[in-house]
Length: 124
Image 1 (cartoon, rainbow, N blue to C red):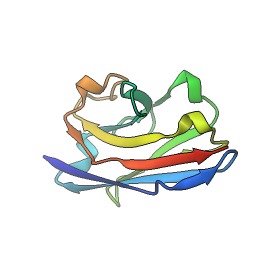
Image 2 (cartoon, rainbow, N blue to C red):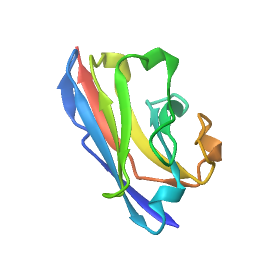
Image 3 (cartoon, rainbow, N blue to C red):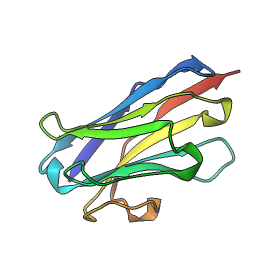
Image 4 (cartoon, rainbow, N blue to C red):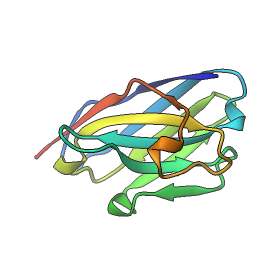
């Protein structure tokens, strides 16, 4: 089992950057692929990015391609999401999640553990 805690969300102006962090506690962080998802008010939870256990394999949401970098530090039990050129439509609660599926997934139903989320608000 793993517990997840996101941080780094805040109010930022359009065009700005943020780095979100997700700290994991518990055993065997390396055995989990990790994902980031977001949910805006009145909308479904949507995939943002995922990374496999080693950090070699990554996938990004097409709508955000080129503005994101996902990474992980297994020594620190932490996964990061760097977001650049932020837009007002990126405003949402951002969640990290863990799955034992080898390469992770873009489907939120395939993740076993979730953090509480961190609010990102982008002003125009």
